[in-house]
Image 1 (cartoon, helix red, strand yellow):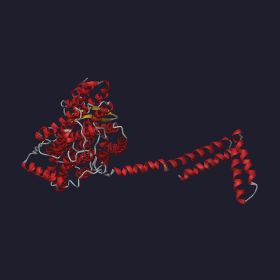
Image 2 (cartoon, helix red, strand yellow; image 1 turned 90 degrees about the horizontal axis):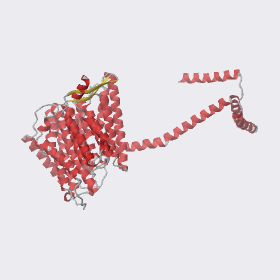
Image 3 (cartoon, rainbow, N blue to C red; image 1 turned 60 degrees about the horizontal axis):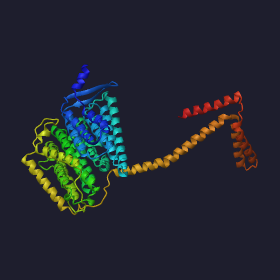
Length: 602
């Protein structure tokens, strides 16, 4: 009774609310279903407010303790933004009459929350894999050939990452005897394998191309969810398990630059935003590597803000795709005339990701850059500043400029459904709120430290950076002119390798497998044939040997033996001859000698 009371006092796990809610969706219809779709993630958000700090919902399993609810400032911060974004995403999806997509989206968010609140590797791995499968469905529900192929590549990469993660977890348990998910030991191979599994989901180059390959092929609504959870869940586990690992500083810095280069080169608006995710997650990974209280707060806060403004940008891109059916910059332009509200929301997202003062990116990203400066990591500080300027070039200017302005494409449409506008409006409001009143976010960060983004030096420095970035864009505009191009990334290698592997499986491997199968079948047939009538079989073998010798000698007597061989074969199965005990012993001796010879050689 006391255990039940303790369980009830622990509150309700938000992930359970989403998973159970997903199973109930087919039971409703019409307006009631729409209300339920929004109420499920909203209820999960509310449940977070009543969760007490500590370890909850613990169970014994095969001698290990599973902890489904590790509640602290870090897990709550990610829990708040995950459920908040899920609510906005569901509002954005209300026009959609597709239970499969809604169920997949809720399972995706529910499993992500499972990762965020778990205290053990076993539960983490199960939720990690559910997350991969649920997100895959948000790609395949687009139901066309590009999404089918991208989905296969997506799940194969995540299968690799999951396998590496599982191998690391098994080694970890074998070495330590514990499945507790805590800060990793840098001296253990298992910790490095687990890190590699996490880095796949974080989309760290060269393990990143699954993101830019698959996310643009997701459904209009599914892509909004995809942009928010997988990479940010990876950021969470890095903060939890690998703070202060120096390699993450440089991996994150490389990510931030890498994403910019490809985003500037891209023609597809959704691929621009996909590469922008890689760029922004790079800041978070670098912050984890720096490992100070300020940088870890910065990574957490930037993940929080990024989910909102990147979700808003994906919503605006999805609205354009939904209303026009087009996603390439070369096919768009002039949409400000027919989609003014979508444009306004897009510009708010662009200002936020570019870190304009009074927008959320300004109050979150600067924490990581300041932490690099405080630790005297001058090359990292300079590169992150360069990456921050580059964000304004691709997501802040290029995306809205070529889609809504530039050369008029002649497309005339209308605003998207009202639910899409409401979702974009909600995300835009939060982007401004966190920019104007960042203390609202700072109060729930893991470490309670003082930080003020609105210093005169910081504001002036950022405005100068943005001004010169804008100037560079318009000076280089002829070079950035829209071109219908395709950018090759590291996925080119595994696409080619996959084709080569499939050719090997279908041609040489199948050929040799057939040869082996034929040989085995023939050997088995000969053995059965021999055991059916050993005396006659020995006679056939003897006569065949005579024929071979006579043919080599050029004798004309071979023909007579050949006729007798055919007669013996014809009668082989029609008669069963008894063999003498001596012959039986002789044959068994021969078989035993062959076995001993094989055993000795082996």
